[in-house]
Length: 478
Image 1 (cartoon, rainbow, N blue to C red):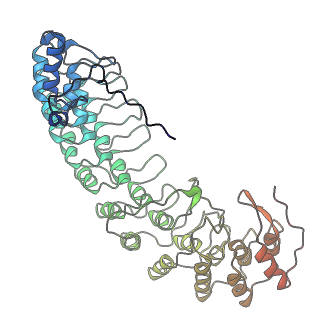
Image 2 (image 1 turned 60 degrees about the vertical axis):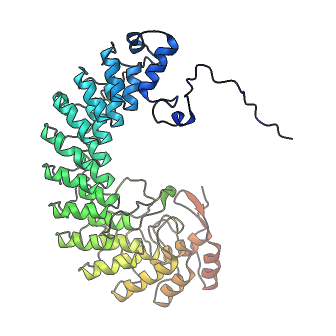
Image 3 (image 1 turned 120 degrees about the vertical axis):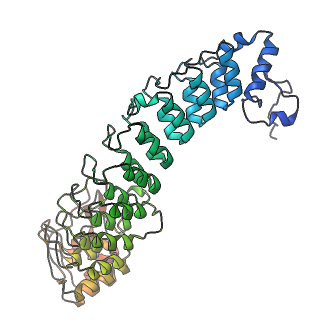
């Protein structure tokens, strides 16, 4: 039989009990009392004068002034300041009452502390200023009070963790109304953090369209890229903030930007239908603009529908295809994204452009270059339809790329008997050999591929039944 947990009926030691249950429900101190009542209770309980109460400290060196500032009680703050409370007292962690009030958005307390002589530029040991935390919280009155009392002297001060400024913190949290007073005080709209992020980049990444608008209006450069070449437009597409991407285009962002090695249109194809790598969730689209609408907008703003990648991303994306030389259409074919393929064709894409290895859209749709059928986008049925589309467009089922891979190699890796039979019916060779010495049957019987030993027994039975032979023994899993 389970015993009931022991509960003592004795009151907690040092607990300050309210006179009524209603008082106990008041917001404020941890004891259920507002700050002024707490101060009075401490005075009465201790039998000491207000100056002694004002100077008292907790274990972390917090004073009653810290607590009153945290709770937002401007009257208690004024009372404590008038009876000897140290306005810039810092806790063991370097936190002042002004920092607490700024972080909590208590504008009246911020004003009271500043009027009482608080230093608006006093930072924590890590360089965090009251203006930074006020900007992060987003209460305009707090920000403006700090600026009126001299916080503008440190307008572009940087905290010690990531080298970020008050404007960056406001942008990252989407506090558009805080942007104008900070900029008016001299904040650098194009300042970079240690990681190379600008205020605009922070706002774009988080999808804060209103803040993006405020920053652009303040003069932020919509083309200022991150150190790796990622433009704000790329960043919006990566995070599926398609409304923000369109907003940037309308403000002059370059739809042809390709400093990372690929364009925003390439990026849109990946973001729309990514690999399920490491079980990471895909970016969740925000706003009302769809990915297909953005594709049209990119082309309308000058994007080259046949632009070719010049670099292979190092993004952890599970992929076996050399994407250098790939067009957006080729990437859409790899994802067997029929809707995107058809839209790109409608906008003038050339469907027969291969990557630098000679791998065509038909080959990648069949499965050449996939990581695995379970982690690569698209179903076997979609792959079959994409291959049929490519045949209609003039691609050949007999094409072999520079690695010796044929469509049938990919179809076996997809594990699709329907696709295998379709390719054979349209003239594909049964036993093509790639540069590793693999035939489709070799693959089906077992290979080491994409970090795993893999076999496709159903494909093996199908191919053997069709008369396939393998010139070499299957490569054993390592």
